[in-house]
Image (cartoon, rainbow, N blue to C red; front, side, top):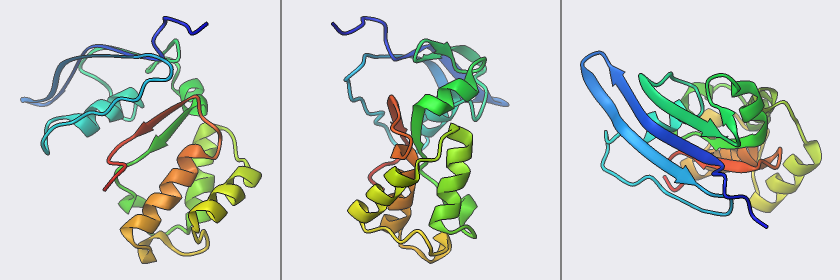
Length: 162
């Protein structure tokens, strides 16, 4: 029997940057097994919402609960159980794919070499090249491997098709 407790619950999420309201009172609930997408024009607050969920930035107001835990109080525990695919890998251009995966795995608390090898073979990803030398599609492969390698209970992806 599936639980009725949402695996992701966002209530009244608001994020301001000075006078700019980037996210305004977002409510969202996701049950286990559901797939949702945030759709909107550039600047609508989709990435800001996701960054608040992952506690990369603090909300101005609101509650975010992931897998029964508070996103701000239980960030480390959440990151161990959630796979995250960033929309931007530009900050990591000097790392190889494997160095990036190891860095993300250190945040997740688990490095599964067997799963990394399986995923890299399946996606035909070269983990030894510097990220700056990779095409957008090959960068996404590295991101996918890092998001999936620890077999997360929840996957959050920002711009997964770009």
